[in-house]
Length: 444
Image 1: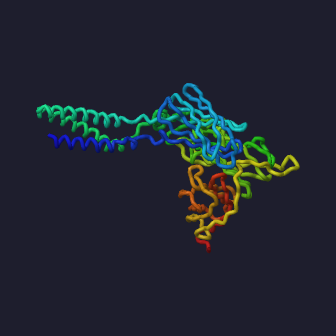
Image 2: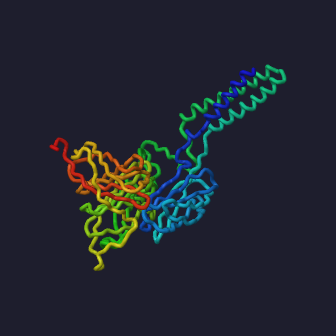
Image 3: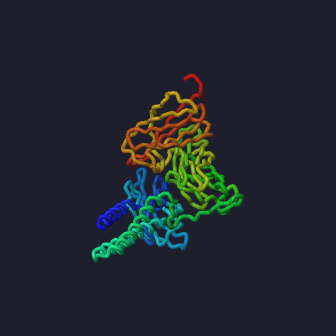
């Protein structure tokens, strides 16, 4: 009898040690949310720390990438469900101090940012892990087993072996149930966390979620309109680059973008000749509208690309162009703009030295300073064909170090403009270069 009880106790200890339920949880619950924004002439990343309970604290910080001096960012968190708001002020910094606000409910919220004279409204969800039904079975089974074990020990001590064995058998059943749940629970689909968006099941031939344009098999790609305010900006003067996103099936604004590499959209602007380059992250100023303020250093034609991802639709590229006129004033110098990234000459190492269309090419570049992750990656490589019809964006996936390494397959022969980017402790470095690609079968 004592030997049986010792075995059961050992099983209980091992079960407790392996009963961590995290494998069945939705990984987004409790995770930090990071959103890049180009605002008030600065490149910032807003960090919303994951919360474990509601009502409870919500911590928000602002990380600065670039030379930002004491930039205050006003914060307002509003619950979409009941309209309750809480406010605070964060300071953009290399190592931010987090502002603690209180949220009273899970579900959809809006974070309003105010910096300089710009305003952005970012939708997000407060998610809290609700646990799983398996946890109740695990810990309930262990509790029942523990109580029965204690009862069995007491009954055995009173020299009543029959009831003691029954109690021990019940404890074994409880431990068996708990152990089986531990083994099989990771195979079951995870329950959605509190605050998650409702799941809409589409049936064949039926359109669902009409307000957002959701359709069976995924939502349609976005129709984008690119414009500037004013319509013809002057060289050296600040202007607003605007993207209006429209659902092709409903004609309504597209307001269901999901974060893609820590941004709602990655906007690349280049001059037609490739001498001007910006990689920025626009503000959501209204449903279906993204805007970013910028300035160019010369007149001419410019190409704009917005990389974005719509929920249940996948990634896509919205493109457009605009023209910049001559400077209005006689002073043609461009005012300083903290969002403009420093540019350094680059001497890339290419393998093979003469890239061939359709075949992988390794591109390596040296770095300077202490490299830190930006947009979740060590480095970025943006490639544009000379005629502007192609844009590619890939990442350095390794750890920060003295060199960046990218692998890219150029789609066709011709000349390409390329820009490698990485972040250091105090700036974002951009290294431009060109690559000439030969056709497959051409002599090297």
